[in-house]
Structures are given as C-alpha cells and as structure tokens.
Length: 211
Image 1 (tube, one colour):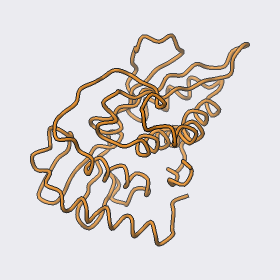
Image 2 (cartoon, rainbow, N blue to C red):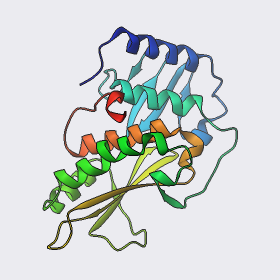
Image 3 (cartoon, rainbow, N blue to C red):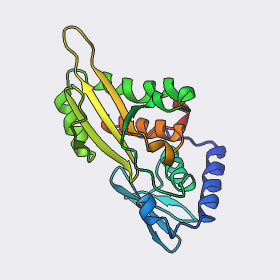
Image 4 (cartoon, helix red, strand yellow):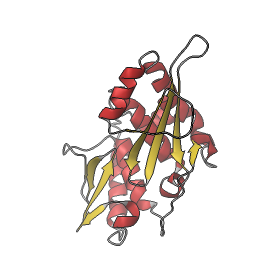
C-alpha cells in the first residue's frame, strides 16, 4: 500500500525542490531523458514519466507510487559527469554497498517471482513481454531470460528456472555493472521490487518493505 504519512509528502517535496535546482540541459544524452524547459521526461519501464518543479506524473497523468518517485529523482540527482558503459552482468550482492539491502531485495523481488510463477513459466513469459521485456541470451543455462530497461541507463535481467522433480523454481535478477554509477543500492532494490510487483499484477508497494 502506498504510504500516507506526512513524512512521505515532505520527502516528495524535498526531492522536487532538489531536482528543480539541477542544470540538466546538457545531460539529455548521458541520461537518456528529454528536457523541455522545466519539464523532464524519463522513460521508466518504457513508459514516460514527467518531472517538473511542482509534481511527478506517470503516463496516465497521475502521481506514481512514492518508491517510483524516489527512483526517478535519484536518477537525476545522482547523475554522473561522464557516461559509463560497463555491460558486465552482476548479481545484486556483487555491488559493494548492497549488503544492508540484500535480504529485502531477495524477499521483495526474487523470491516472490519464484513463488508466483512456479509451474507457470508460460504466464511469466507473457507477463515479461507485456511489460516490454526483451528475450535475451546471456550465456546462462535457464528456462527463460528477459531484459527490462527500467531506466535508459539501468537495465534488469530476469533469469528463471522452473520447478522440477529435484529443485524448486528459482528467479535471479541481474544488473549491468554500470547501474551502480547511476543509482544507489536502495534504488536498485526498489526497481527490482517494482518489476516483481508489476509481473504479479499488483500495486507497487512502499519502501518500508525493503527493510
């Protein structure tokens, strides 16, 4: 459920003020965004979100869940000064600052996908396609693998093996190494959580579930 406490509105307004103070007109290509005056358009899972000094709206014209707003703002605030292009795939735990969020990452993303789609690989594949995922071969033996462009410089790779007589279903979510140059570990965990919830057809949850 989306958080309603006043503190979240305070955080939201603080993010808007910080983003409004940025000069991003020269970073369109670096971040893969559009800058039109004070309106910044950011593709999030292939759907445009718009950030202005007053609000953040998704492709439906409504405010996204708080966790998504945080990810979008942090993507802008943490922008590096130069592009990074390291497409090597790594697990979440491979990132040096991931330790505090590892359990939450597993509990809110990888395990829910494994449980929800055990014995339902065809349903998972349909969901991946519906969300704009692209089938990919990453050189790992698996039942299916899909790439999702969460943000223009942050991609998530879903690797799934269905249950058999010896092992339960297992989902792994991988990132390109460069992802850590564009977002912090909490935001990468939130992106994975959003993906899991969207695949399950549920409302995006709040950040508290990562704890």
